[in-house]
Each structure stands twice: as C-alpha cells, then as structure tokens.
Length: 251
Image (cartoon, rainbow, N blue to C red; front, side, top):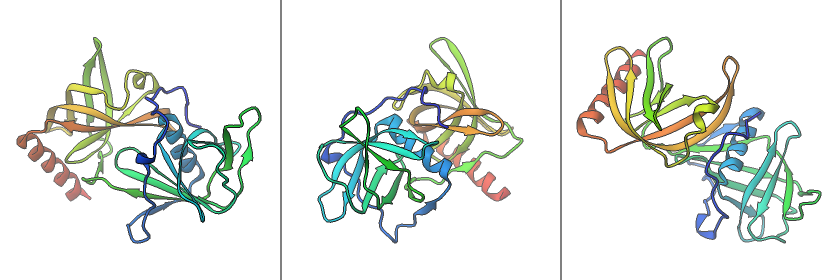
C-alpha cells in the first residue's frame, strides 16, 4: 500500500482550465491491468491533488479531485468541484500523471455515499486503466550492477540516491521516504553530481517534476523522484547522448 505519510505539495481546487482531453484510440497508449499499479496511480493523484476531468455520458464534463484511495477495500472517493452532479451511468475519468503522462479509466457503476461526508462520492477501483506516456525523451533504466547514482547537498545534509533511469533531458532517482521529506514538486537541486557508470560524471542542476511513492519487494517503501535537468549546456547534452547511446547498444 502506498505510504500516505510522504508529503507532496497538493494542488488547489481544480478549475475548468485544468481539463484534460480523453486519450485518443490511435494515440499509442498502453493498458495497465495490475491492481497494485492502478491503486498506486490513483493514490498518486490523491496525494498531489491533480485535477481529474470527469466525462459523464450525455453530460458536460466536470472537474474533480481524488480525495482518498483504499486499495484493500478496492474503492476510491471523489471530490467534485461542482457538487450535486449526477454520475449514475458510464463515466470516463482522465488526469495527468506527473508531467509526461496521463491516465484514463471508465466506470459503469453508480457511486456510493460516504458516511458523514456528503461532499464525497465513493467508486470501485477500475480494473483497467489506459496510460499515455508523453515524454519528450525516452528513458532508459540504469544497467544493473553498475554505479549509477546522484549526490548533492541540501540544507547542510548530503544526500545520495540511486539513479534508476535517465534520458537526454532528465533523470529518475530512488529516494527513501525520509529523504523525500525534504523534496517537493518544483524543488531546485543545485550542483547534483550524477555518476553514470565508471567513465562519466556530470554536475547538473535539477528540478523535481514528479514524486511518486511505490513499494519494492527488497527495499520496501520508496519514492520515485523524476527530475528535469535545468540550464543544460551543449556539452552536457552531448555527454548524456553518449551515455544513452552506450546503454542502448548494450541492449
């Protein structure tokens, strides 16, 4: 179960301008069916307060946020920006998932009331979600058994995190929940030393773009920290391109 104690900067109430279009049938999405992954994705939306665009059949779209997720009970609660809207028929839900993807699912079930919370609606978790990745650069997982990591100093403390993936424009770090306490979306990390194998070390400024709690079998609760490289020089881009090409050739 996702650790809800990991603090993320929750967004304010959704507005019509935050609406996200439905995923097109020919857009190249992939299908997510694993119950853990679906619960984890919806929990991330709840933690961040990401706007959810709700498309009831035969009605205009409405805006909402996911208030909470209960993976064990296989339900989630929805907080509509405009209360009183009837969602009794087939309904499509769409939301941005981080800065480079969006998720969509469809439910054909009337919501249940939430005791003592008339402002919330309870729905069953979906069995299937569509996920559309919109990354400008493809990311590659760091090779197993090689030294790929990040080191930086913040608030007088030294942080060291494994680098689990990277691209020509950003990196993904794996943090412990304790390390993630110091981070939030939009946080600037200056002078981060990125070790990418035995022959490439880059010092870069990063901006946190995504925080996503998840669980691993060996390490337990972890937090995915997706970062964009800021103020990238031509030399740095060329170095990253060489690193990407090197890993791609191994595969």
